[in-house]
Length: 88
Image (cartoon, rainbow, N blue to C red; front, side, top):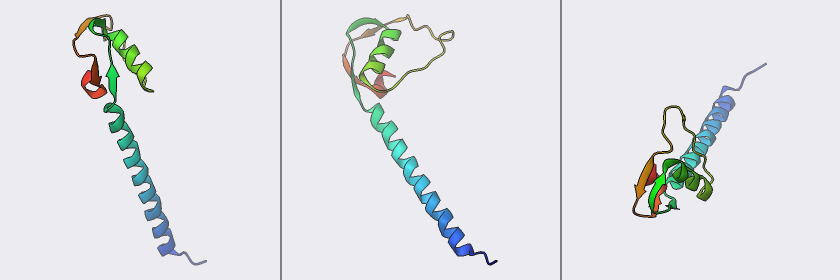
């Protein structure tokens, strides 16, 4: 039985190219999600309410450790529409 090393090498390169392409597409999706503009209520708002608005307006979910993070803290919001990256 003869092993065709050339064919095996080309198959590996083809798989590597496909994996690289999929990685770039995933990264592009993450960057575009952070560029979304979110509408927030103005005035004093709790951080939990901000997280709820982000989850409602995007298809993202925000996970955090409630024992280490005070989500009832009030934050003053002056500009109602901001990019997601700026809010976070």
